Amino acid sequence: MKKIILFNGIMMILTIFLTGCGEPEITQEKDTFELGETVELEKAVVYDVVKVSNVEVKNTGNFNTDKTGSYDVKYTATSVKGKTAEFVFTYNVKDTVAPELTVNKETVDLCVEAEFDINDYASAKDLSECTIDYTGDLDMEKEGEYLITITAQDSSGNISEEKNLTVW
Image 1 (cartoon, rainbow, N blue to C red):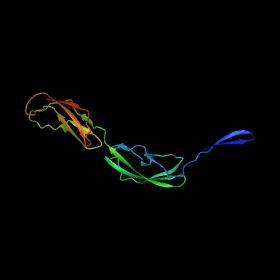
Image 2 (image 1 turned 30 degrees about the vertical axis):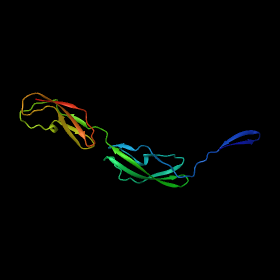
Image 3 (image 1 turned 90 degrees about the vertical axis):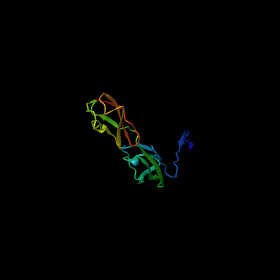
Image 4 (image 1 turned 135 degrees about the vertical axis):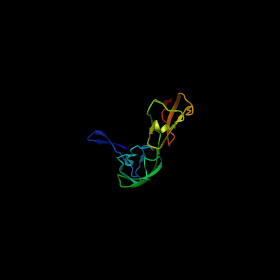
């Protein structure tokens, strides 16, 4: 609201700002986090500090970024006028990062009919459980040179970069 005032013949414009007396408002800053990400729930919401004096987490809903899933988190916000309101936000934890695959050697020399376990030659690092697999026409019954392609896949379906191994 603006009001014009005359003071000793000088015109002054007075601007008055009114703040609402309603309930405090907070919103989610984002609703999805990566598996393993560090999150402070108190800082996962945004609000106008002129209108809201305090925000606290009332119930975490067992929020945990070490496990994928959806979590409902309850907040209580208090306005500068002393009014409180509760909010429930759903946060999702997802795994979108592929495993990091390491192949120990580029070439392996094995005897015909030897046991072949891909886990002896490759390893994967990830925040969730992984499996390592290979493709190629490896025939341990027959002498020859075989090129196999190795990948790792985590429990969320993310697949690593392909790496090769030559088996003699």
